[in-house]
Length: 220
Image 1 (tube, rainbow, N blue to C red):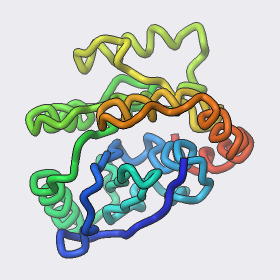
Image 2: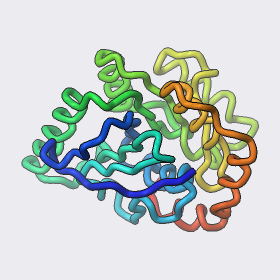
Image 3: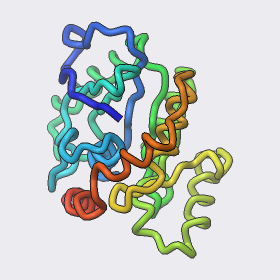
């Protein structure tokens, strides 16, 4: 996978002029969004990873293989912002989701260790109302004992009322489940599937040790 940063945007005047389809990665602020993006793209520092959740304040656009854009948006559910900052952030997000015609799918991250939050469920409902396809990705699956993973995924599926087979578990530390997410995205965008040789090369681009180091900086 070839990925490159395009632009950070605070509003429609700085949205990139592009006809590429956009896939938006969303999730609450401590769900491991930046670690997921870095592991997914095979680049250690493509997205910001820090000790404090909720550092993303802009819409960050990344070109993927010249075929589509991955868009990293601010996480939700983090309280250490002023009321005016929250309002400004909300307006920026609403404008983007309601007026950006390039949006073709959303990757909704949920924490595999816990039931989806009310915010998670509200976001999924919002995208369904907007008729935007949603890919549910359960992060941090490596932190769930293997014997308990089926029960955790089943609980998530029940909470958001979808078949458990539609939930894609991933680990940004162990680098598992990432190519399944890419395949699903490419399927939604009607792009050619990932070739096996490409997937193997991408898995070796970052080591599990590198991912463990950066994932540990994001709060649980």
